[in-house]
Image 1 (cartoon, helix red, strand yellow):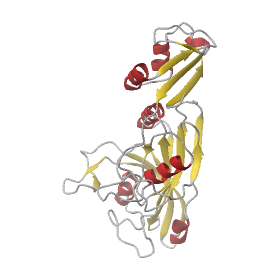
Image 2 (cartoon, helix red, strand yellow):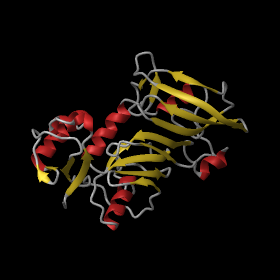
Image 3 (cartoon, helix red, strand yellow):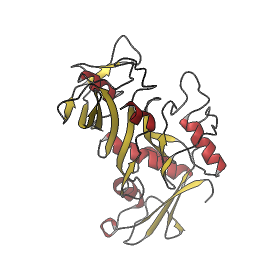
Image 4 (cartoon, rainbow, N blue to C red):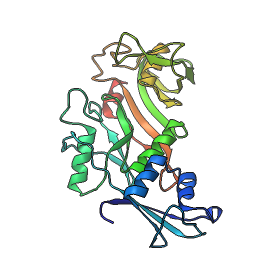
Length: 295
C-alpha cells in the first residue's frame, strides 16, 4: 500500500489464541503511542482480510500491519554528499559518518548535515522513509550511525539501546601510554554547572560505565577500544580524561593537537537486535585514515 510501511509476521504456536492487540504489544513490543497511530491511521490485515485489535490469532496465521509513513523532518535541506552505507533494508539505514559532519542542523542551521545527505539519497532513489537517528554522534566523532526509517523501528530500537542490551564499541587515540591494558571505568557524569556543553565526573552525576582495552601503544600514545555500558553525553571523552588519558585532539577535555584536526574517536562496532526481523546484527566500520596517521 502506497504511503504505508508494511510489517509482516507469521504467528508462532505460543501466540495461538491471543488477540491481535495483545500479540503486537506483548510479543512485538509495540508501544502504546504506535498502537494508537496504527489503530487511527493504519490498517491491520489477518490472512489478507481486514482485522481489528480484538480478533484472535491462530498458529501460522499471517498478520500484516500497515503504519502510515512519516514525513522527513522539516527544515533539513538535501545535501548532495556521498553516503557510506554499511547496512540497509526497509526498516533501517546504517551509515559510516565522516568526521566534521553534524548529524542534524544545530544552532548554526548548517547547510550540510548527515540528515541532509540521507534526504538527498532518499529523494534520488525515491525511498519513502523518515529520519530517526537512533544512535547519534558528536560532529567530530566518526563512525556508525543507525537511522530508523519508520516509527515502529525507531520506537523498538531506541528502547533496546536504552537497556544497553547490545554493544557499542569505539576506537580512540589517547594521550600517553595507557596502563593497565584493560579494565572498566565506573564514574558518574553530569553537566558542569558553569557550562552548557561540558560534562564532568561527580559523585552526584548519573551512572556511567565504560570498558577499555588497549590495542596498541606507540609514540607516547595509545589506541584504545572502548565499550559503552551506559550512554551519557561525551562519556568516552570524559572518562578518558578522568583516567589521565584524554582523547588526542579533544580541546574540550584535553588540549589542542596540531597533528589532529579533530578529536580522534570513531564508532567502530555495533551489535543490536533487529527491531522487525528479530535477528542479531553486527555492523563494523573501519578506522578512518586521519586516525591511523595520528598514531
